[in-house]
Amino acid sequence: MDDSKVVGGKVKKPGKRGRKPAKIDLKAKLERSRQSARECRARKKLRYQYLEELVSSRERAICALREELEMYKQWCMAMDQGKIPSEIKALLTGEEQNKSQQNSSRHLKAGKTDANSNSYEEIAQVLLGKVPKVTQP
Image (cartoon, rainbow, N blue to C red):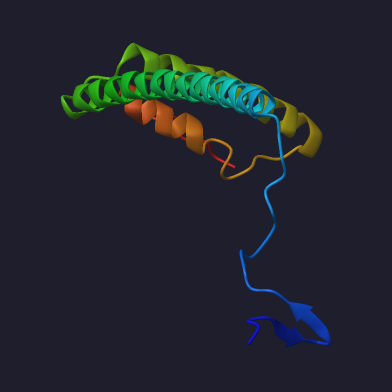
């Protein structure tokens, strides 16, 4: 008897399943494979360059943050010893000048004093070791 099967009204013969291999020129196939490998290596090279740049930029950011942290630690140690670093003094005096300029413009506009307007100046003076001035309304 014949090994052929009838499926859906069609006679199928036993044998290999799937597509039959197309008869492709072996040289063309090898060339396509080489080209694909070249493109893959180029993509890989670009990816590694991007990742290296990303790592180096993150490392620079980490170094900058570590330096900033060390500066803050030194400031804290100095303040624990009762000394106020010159950088903080400069920041505070800069804030005082800005606040006094803002307060003078507020006083001119509003014609009255704000209860919280001197708070930064008072904090700065306390930190600088000065006695805060007392304002009377």
